[in-house]
Length: 85
Image (cartoon, rainbow, N blue to C red; front, side):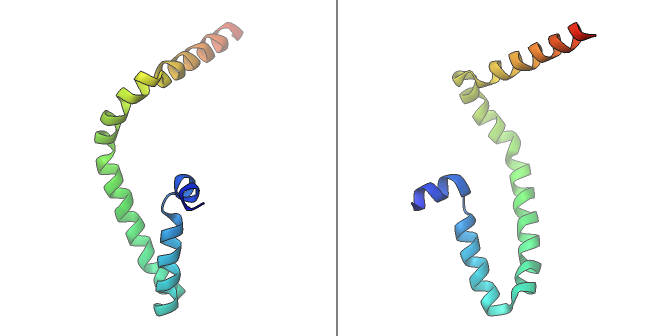
């Protein structure tokens, strides 16, 4: 069950456990106050690494055929909207 939870919820159970422990020690308002900047730092870290992740993942999507399907779907939607006009 724990593998299922980690697959669909990521690290949320671990973060919830840590936040609960911290809130019991220093209080809920301070836990939220500390958690905010940690989330912002995590977002900046992820945003900085996003171009590298795109380069690594794009060949996988092309191999799986995911990207052409999306492009064909967008193209057919555009063709339908042009035909209606």
